[in-house]
Length: 283
Image 1 (cartoon, rainbow, N blue to C red):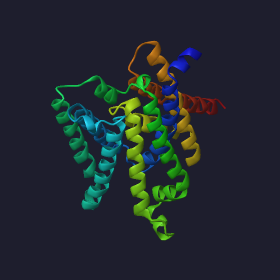
Image 2 (tube, rainbow, N blue to C red; image 1 turned 135 degrees about the horizontal axis):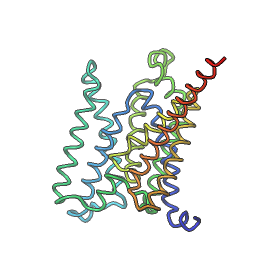
Image 3 (cartoon, rainbow, N blue to C red; image 1 turned 90 degrees about the vertical axis):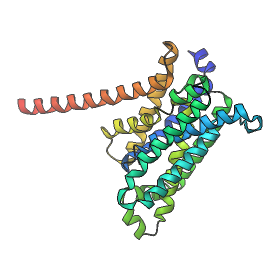
Image 4 (cartoon, helix red, strand yellow; image 1 turned 60 degrees about the vertical axis):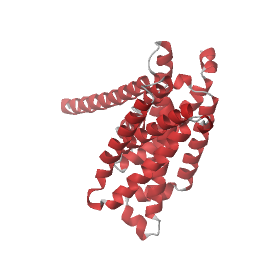
């Protein structure tokens, strides 16, 4: 066991970082009913990764230590476009999601075809390969993760106010537009740093499933955050171990464990509720 932990020490370190920031950001996404935005920004991040890979093979001096830099840049652009389109269509703000979802997917397909199909690196970003991360991935994840957590800790009250009562936050002088803008940027940063380990096709699940599980048992917003992080880290560590043990896709295994945790808590709560009703009727 110790040999396994040492061999994949970078994977365990990234798992801990991702397991904390994803549900932290995902909680605000779920509460604001922006769950689908994860799909949009993950596709934009994937487009950036594909472009970086293409440029690196064509133009030698365009090479960077990690393709996450391109993914992060494109995810931020996608976040800015989401906000811009929401302002351009105030009565149909949700229209920005399918527009950018289609654009991101189309751009990815074009870039993939320009590379004559998928290569190993792109497949890792599509479906995740946490067991193959290296020191550079860890440094990138650590830097972006620290930035996300610092911003959240410094502006927690502002994020909380804008998320639950935008009108009240405006009345007490909170710069609502700025906070909303920062939230979108943080979502983009979180997704871009998670794509490498979980995969662009699955990253939304890691941001939403632990939060959905926590909603079943939490009694307040802070407990929702704590339970979400607990379920997230648990799913990642278990998924990491089983993917190594049975030679399974890491990202898919993690998401399946998250889904099983959700179903388990849902069934236990439902069974417990029915049992309590049956007991009360017996009296």
